[in-house]
Image (tube, rainbow over all chains, first blue to last red; front, side):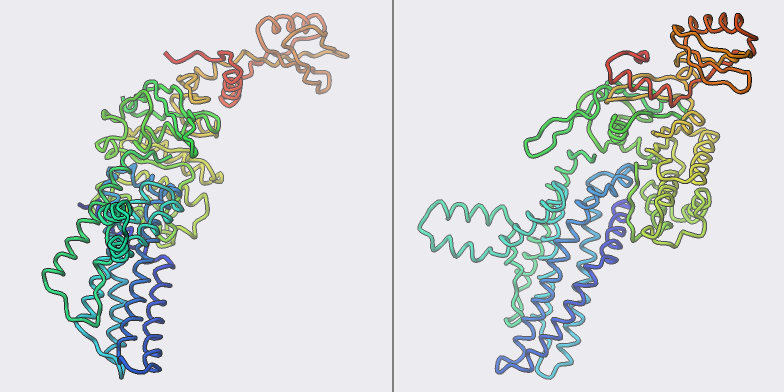
Length: 253
Length: 315
C-alpha cells in the first residue's frame, strides 16, 4: 500500500505542476464568468444558460485532464524511460498503474472541486443565477465520468505509445459520449447487422451518457446515484485491469 | 553468486510488420559478491538490453539466470538493488530531495531514516545545497550524479550502473569513482557498463566483454591485458642507424639524438631487432609496452566482427 500511495502522490504532484492543469482551471473560470455575461444578455429561461455553460466548462476541462494527463502518466513516462528507475525498485506494474490512476483521480478531484467552487461562488453571487442541489449532483456525476475517461486513457497508454494512445482514447471517449445516439440510431435502423454492432459497442464501450445529469431537473434517486457510482467504479477497475495485464507483458526497452 | 546468467537472448519485434531484430544473441557471465564487475562493449552490443533483462524490464526470449538468488527481475531481488539507467531522465518538476525521497520510499525506507539519508547522499554526490532545486534546472552531469544517488538509497546489496560516467566532467567522474570504490569497501557488489576503458581498468575486478549481442570473454582485467600481443620498444644508440626492411612486426619510431626507437610486436621480430641493434650499435633498452584494456577491447571487437576468434570464448 505504501508504494501505491507514494506513486499516487508522485503522479498527483506531476499533474498538478503541469501547465495543462493550470490552463484548464483558468479556462473553467473564464467560461463560468462568461456564462454570467451571456446570461445577463439573454431573455427568458433565467439561470439556465449560466448552468449549461458552467457544466460544459467543467466537463471539457475535466475530460481533457483525464485524457491527456492519463496518457502522459504512463505512455510518456515509458517513452522518456522515467518509469525505469521506479520499476527497478520493488514495485509491481499493477502497483504502478493503480498508483498513477489514484494520483490522476486526486488531480481530477481537485480540478472538479475548484471548478465547482468557482461555479458556486458565481451562482450564489449572481443576480439571475441560483445554486441548486441538482447542479451540484450533476458535477459529482461529471467527476465519475472523468474517472472512467482517465481509466480509458491509462489503459491505452499502457498498451501503446503516446500518439496511438491519444487517438484511441479520444475515439473511445467520443463513442462513449454517443451512447444514447447510438441506441436511438440502432432502434431506427432496419438493418440487423447495425443493431448488433450497436449493441456490442454499448456493451464493450463504457456509456458515458450515464453520467449526464441535467442541473435543471429534480435530483436523481439515491438508487440511480449508487448505480452510477458502481458503474464508474466497475468500468474503471476493468479498464485498469486490462491495462495492467497487458503492461505486465510489455518490454520496456 | 550475485548475478548469474546463461545464454541470455532477446529478440524484439519492430515496425508494423513485426520484423524481428535480435538485440542479444547469447550472453553468459557470473558476478561474485563484493565484486566490481565491468560490462564492456561497443554501442549497440546489447549491454543495456541485458541490464533491462536482469531487472525484469525486458523478458528474455531465451536463456535465464538469477539475481541475488532470485529469478531475473523478481521483486525480492529488486528489494536489494539500486539502478542507474543510461542517460537518466527524471521528472523535471521534482526537486532533487523529492526524487531521493520517492526512490527511498519505494525501496522500503522509513521517512525518519530518509531525513538522515537524503542529505548524506546529496553530499556524497557533491550536490549538497541543491536538494531544493527542481531537476529541470540540473545540467547533464548533475542529473547523472543525482541518478547515482537515487541508486544508492536504501543501501542496496547490488548496484547496477548503466554508463555511470557518461556526460560527467573530470570532477563528476572522480565523485562516481569514489562512490564505486566506497561501495566495494563496504562489501557491496557493483555491476557497471561503460565505454570509458581507463575507468573500467582502474575500478573493476573482472570484466565481461560483449560484442554484437554475444559474450566474447569474461576475465580479470589483468588477464584481459595479458591477452594483448607482446609489444616492446627497443632503444639502440648509434650513428646513421637504419632499420632493415623485412623485419615483420618492427616499426621505426624515429630517433632522438643518436638514440633510435623501434616498436616491436611478437617475439620473433624482437629477436631480430635485438640482433640488428647489437650489430649496428649499442643496445640500450628493451622496454615491454603494456597494451591498455581499451586497445585489447578495440582489437577483440574488430576481430569478432570480422569473424576471427581474437579472444577465448567463455567457459
